[in-house]
Length: 293
Image (cartoon, rainbow, N blue to C red; front, side, top):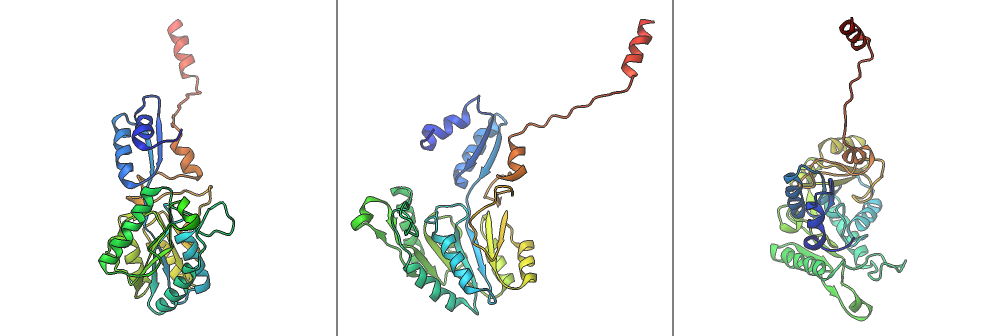
C-alpha cells in the first residue's frame, strides 16, 4: 500500500495484527514509530538518518576519490540514507580536490532518470525540493562558500519535475547546520582537515552513525579508520553508498535502534526464539512405574 504517514503508516504501525515494524525513514519519524511499537511491545527495527562522511587523505588516488564523491553525493540526487553529504579532505590535496570535484559536478547531466545519459534525477516531490533549496540559503547565511549549483532548474523539460543543480559548498565548518543535519538532497559540504585523527573527529562529530568512507593508500591508516569511525558501515576506497545483502546494514546513534537490515540480523529480527528442553532419560518412566507399584 502506498501513502503518507498519518493516513497509512501510523494506522499500520498501531494495528493489533501487525506484530513487527521495520521502518526506513527519518530519525524524527523513527522516534514516533518507536513510541507506538513500545506501547504493545512490538518488534521494531529502525533504519533512520545519516550524514555520511567521506575522508580523502593526502595519499589518496584523487581520480578514484572524485568519482566516488560524485556518485555518493549526486548519483541518487542525494536521496539516500547512505548518500555522501560531507567530504572531509586533508589540506595537502584540498584545493586540487575541490577544483576537480567542482568542475566535474558542474558538468553532470540532470534530467529524467529514465534517460540512460542522465547522471542526476529530480527531487522526489516539491516539498523535498524546497527543503534542498532552504538548506542552500542556510549554508550561505552560515558563511560557507557556494561554489557550484544552488538553484532550481525549471526551464524547458525541467518544468515537468522538481529539479535543482548539483550543489557544492566548500570551506565548511564542521559545526554548521549544513554539515550536521540530514538534507536528503544533492547538497555536498567539503570540509578541510589536518590529518586522519582530525578527520575522524569531524566524521564522528554528528548525531548520526550510518555509513563512512576513507580514501587512502596506507593500509595502517585504513585499519585505524575502520577501528575509530563510529558508524555501522565503513568503505575503504569506495563511496558511502551501496550494500551487500548478505552483510548487516544499519548504524549507530540517531541512525537507528541497534537492529540491522540484511544478512542473518534481518532474519533474526523477524524470528521469535523458543528454547526447548527435553529430558531423554528414563526418570519419568521409572517414576510412573514406582507409583503404579
